[in-house]
Each structure stands twice: as structure tokens, then as C-alpha cells.
Amino acid sequence: MTTTVSAPDVAPSDAEPSPPRKRRRRPSLPYLLLVPAIVLELAVHVLPMLTGVWMSLRELTQFQIRDWSSAPFVGLDNYRVTLDFNSAIGKELLHSFWVTIAYTVLVVGLAWVIGLAAAVVLQRPFRGRALLRTLFLTPYALPVYTAVITWSFLLQRDTGALNHVLVDQLGLVDDRPFWLIGGNSFWSLVLVSVWRCWPFAFLCLMAGLQSVPQDLYEAAYMDGAGFWRRLRAVTLPMLRPVNQVLLLVLFLWTFNDFNTPYVLFGKGAPDEADLISIHIYESSFVTWNFGLGSAMSVALLLFLSVVSGLYLFLTRKARSDA
Image (cartoon, rainbow, N blue to C red; front, side, top):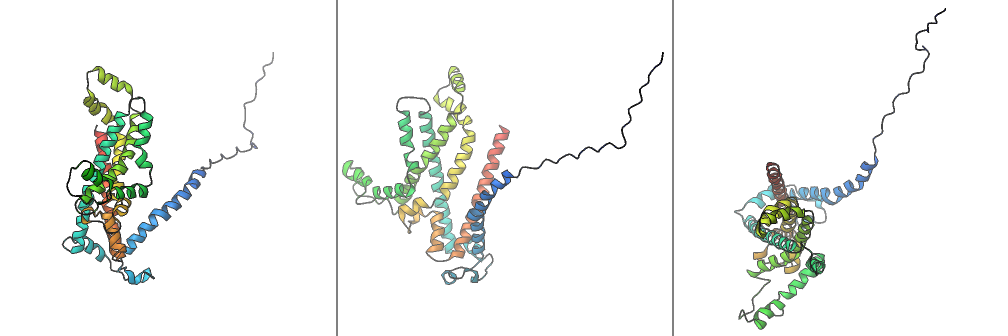
């Protein structure tokens, strides 16, 4: 009987090497799609900001308007004049700053409160809810110039509808008050801005309320929680992410608001309603001191950047601690 022993497997010396692994090519399409957005961002925002910073370092007046590059370099002199609150220019800028702070606090606060109240009222379905939603959003859908010009007609002293109702119809006051000049101009500006802004707050809060589970309200109701308790314990905590973004957007829009006071008062806004955006415009295009106006704009940009960064840091810290 013979035994067959198989030979051990020996790798052939002339075996072909395995082909190298192909490197996975990174997809370049997402980066290519970002190129138009980056180019537009540079053209629309970054380049004008850099140009404004360059102008703020020059003594740029009407005499160099034909050749801006010939404006003499003055370094930080425009910033020293802007931030010298003992000078006339600094005092006027500081006055506009405090007027803008008061205006922003009132408009943002009132718009948020009215928007929240309307969103909560319309949270539950009832007959006519869609019609009310449409009516509430009408001020936000109107073009800003159309809406503000309409308000300027309503607030005229002799021919305005407001004085006609207060004086002729209701007899609440004897003399027709001025609404577009003097101390009342500030409250007129607040009224028009709140009327324009609160539908946006209503829209955001109403969308946020749609994502709140109804089980939470039912559980709170079963525990005997009333309306205010449910609002404080369920609604507001669940709307915290929406409020974080909404309040920041409203703050930036309101603080930089130019269209509303410019259309309502024209080029010469009263001192009581002299917002900082109008003040910078007058410093640049009325006195023709573009270098000083640019320095004010850069200072305003730095202030808003610091406030926004601080707000985001504090809200994120509060959310992580919760």
C-alpha cells in the first residue's frame, strides 16, 4: 500500500503583485457649490466692511469725493473724535446711542410680548383661526415704505386720522398734538416699529409652539396647573431655543433700523427720535464727513459684535447649566 504525500503549498515566485488600492477621491462638488456663496459674501459684506474701515482712517470729505484715494491718512483721529464724549460730536453720538438703546428695548420687548400672546391665543384650533393668522401677518407682508408712509399720513397733526379720532370724535384732548416732532416723535417711532415687528415674533413663536408636545400640557392640566403655571413651566421652557434666536434677530434689526425713522421723519429726524443709524447717515451725507461717519459705523459694528457674542455665550452657558 502506498501513501501519497502531497507537496506543501509554495507560493510561486513569479506571482503577480496585488494591484495598489485606489485612493478614494474626495467629492469636490460640495466645495464647488459653496464658491458662489463665498464670492457673494465677500462682495456684499466683507469688501464694504473693509472699505469702511479704510475710509475711517482717512480725512475723507467732499473735497476728495472725486478721488477717494487722495484723502490724507489720519490714523485713529476719527475714532478719537467719535469717542470723545466731552466734545460736541461725541455728546450728540452718545445721545443717539441712548435713544437707540431705549428704542430697541421697548420695540423688542413689546413685539415679543404681543407676538407671544397672539401665538398662545391661536395655539388651539377654533373657527376663524386661519383668518386671524392671515390678518396678524399683514403688517409683516407689507413693503416697509408703504406701511411707514401710511403711518406718516395717520400721524399728521392737522389732517391725520389719529388726531381726528382723539380730538374730534372722542374729545380726549383739546389741542391737536404733534406726533412727528417733539417728544411724541419717539413714541410714534416706537408705535410704528412695534406694529411692523411683532408679526415676525408671532410667526416664529407660533411655529415653535407647534413642536411642543400636547402631552406636557395635559399632564400639567391633570396636576392642577392653571394657565400662568402652564405658560411658565411648559411653554416658555420649550420655546427657549426659539427665543434665543428670535430675540437676537429682533435686537440686531431694531438697533440698525434705518428705513422706519428715515421714511417717517425724512432726513431731519427730531432729537428725541435721533437713532444712531440716522445720526451716522447725517454725519456722512449731510456734513460730507465720510471719514467720521465711517468711524462711527465701525464703532457700532464692534459694539454689536461684542453684545451678540456675549449674548450667545451667556445663553449657551445657561442652557448647559440647565
